[in-house]
Length: 164
Image (cartoon, rainbow, N blue to C red; front, top):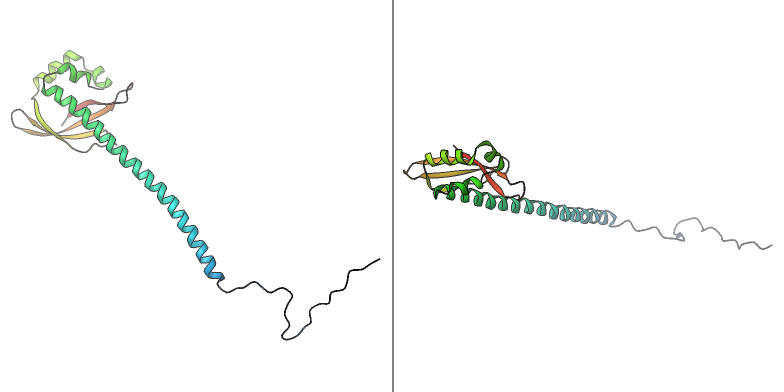
């Protein structure tokens, strides 16, 4: 039977070196700090990029809604101004058409003063309204509010009514 050779323990005393040196401790705090800083930087870049994308989507959605709302209100007001009451009625949302027949609508709007010019404000995406500064054919002005809806089939904006 053979036995493993005996390895003597390192001698004890001053100046003796251990068989394996200890890992360095110098700069350890700086490396940990740099690692944490880099990790925080990566998180900020990723989350910041996601936040920027969300803000960009919201801004572009608001801009597109503003354009679509302005187009719907303009088309409706222009049809009324030009006396094309059948076209204006067709531009109304389904609820407004169900509440009032085309003949009743034409009779009502033909008796109202004609809006000759108008300026639209900012579309409110929460209340689905758009302010309209209108000038009538007699020269008087009024601050109106157009209520909007969407067509169930096409998704296009429609006017549901205009009032003060």
